[in-house]
Image 1 (cartoon, rainbow, N blue to C red):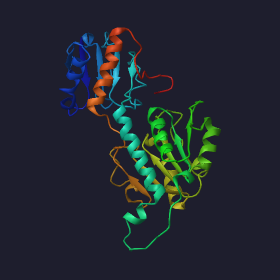
Image 2 (cartoon, one colour):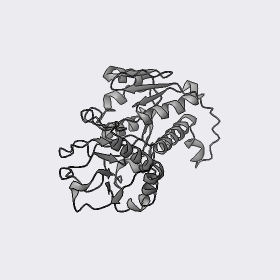
Image 3 (cartoon, helix red, strand yellow):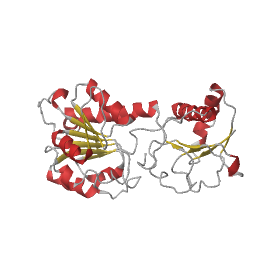
Image 4 (cartoon, rainbow, N blue to C red):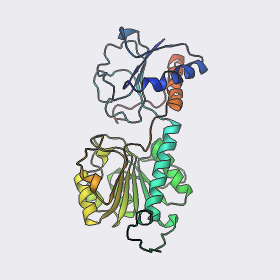
Length: 309
């Protein structure tokens, strides 16, 4: 069996020993390469969407393309990609996202900035409300959104989840569809966006929807940069309608040095670090899907091309 890893050159050293070890642990004999003189001999493609490979047609024997990223918007519309595409759903990646979301939610909830950054040495003894008094909207209820929602619930935040289609989740109030989104936003003092980028989610938070938020609400976006209309967000920040935006993802990355977000006093930029693929755990997700492919079992985390994720 031949596996090929298509990714930036710096990625291969991270997997060079970990991936063979995971294959051996699963009892799978395979040759791993980073170049394919004969594409028709490749059984599985391990793929980072930033890789230069764009034409999948020559890979006629390939049983699946296994993405190292959770987001697949760069590849899902590729017409030459006829093989099954699986996205990365990795427990360690999920843990990283939960930590980022919980950390920044608590930061805004507790008003930590006024004490950490206090150049005037102001004695501000204002006490924040309890978490149970701070409604949170979780936009997106996939693996990442649901895990983050559960973690916030464990701290007593009243979390309401939103998705594009109906979802019944035990112990978590949910809403769906365009009208449901409006309802959820109207009650949310903190909004977390953990949705994929699709034509339906682009500019989901536009000027009209930002105006629905309680004045001074905080927005956390570790999902995709295109979920928020940047011009509308900057206007809402200037007007005080949005109190603060903590953003981990952007339409252009790295964020250009002259972008207004860098200098805005009510914006925190984190450099796409909310969740990362950890090679040790990601290798085991990849190997499990290879095992399933060889056993004729359904692949895990198969992408629905119609929905875009």
